[in-house]
Image (cartoon, rainbow, N blue to C red; front, side, top):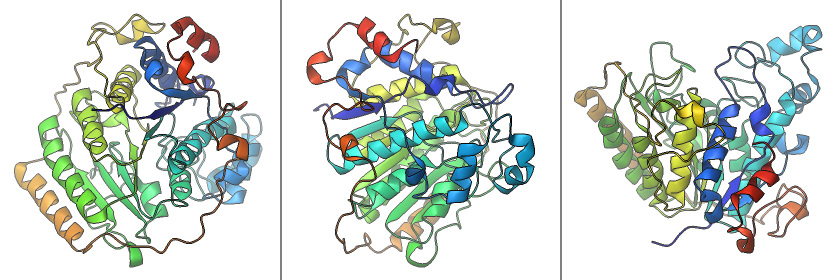
Length: 421
């Protein structure tokens, strides 16, 4: 099996942002993930980029200008005087104002945008941005810890070169922001496997949400109950995704790998292992489509880092040692210090065989109604959204990578490039 050409995006600043005391979203998980990627030596197998930072024009490809202007201007010191705008844009408790908010959005969004450009120009087979995948943000407001929807912006860029984009979401929460953005078009199919019911956020994602107009049957929702385990999850995931690829025939794939679907997550209620989560990634990779791999949710950060490191290895066709290498955050991974932690819980699996069979049959019936992959007449290809210096394969100030000749350099040089992270 040949090793795919993988681009990996990481900005050392991204792990330094802080949503606030007690908030479950911890950007520091990205520093832990990257540190494991370094210490396992996976960076030697990829092209590693310090990503482009998205500007206002990039973000307004999807979001309204007044909302992005608010994100750019609001600060911890000025938020009290902007109470009306905070309410208007749903910024507050779940989506707080914190130091560097706009810069944080610029980093993770720019990485997804640049990943899309790399795929569009066939500069890689797989593009990885663990900082991205913030799937709840809406056109005019923040939602569910998400401010700018980097996924939608990345897909809009992909649509400049590809007739059909398949979006797959394995976060425990419904990918509502992405679904809503493409609900009425057949050029994007959204597939979301998530917990549904019991007033679980965001409260959307029932089986009957299938799209409207030209987008009818291109929104696929797989609503699951508490406690689903590896066997039950894959018994749904594989046949449904096999049917999706058969009937929709996507040109490119975007895979959101939210790790809050793991057992023992701080906010989740599933019983999935990191092996199962990774098997979902491996299955999608097996179709051989150009793919953007993104992060998302995940609130037990020691498990998030291990999961995404495992999945970085999967896209590279690499096998990792079960014992974690010594690293700067080694103490986070105790007491076992293993790549695959015990994520079993006492949560009862409420997904009966009858229930999962009904979901599968309903979903496959809707997919049959597509009657073949939608076609689209492609017009003149628009220019990339990125500046010219960011779209070629040469080195640029904001596009720092490891060229082929440098990949075998000592790990110390990598730490120098990325600073303390």
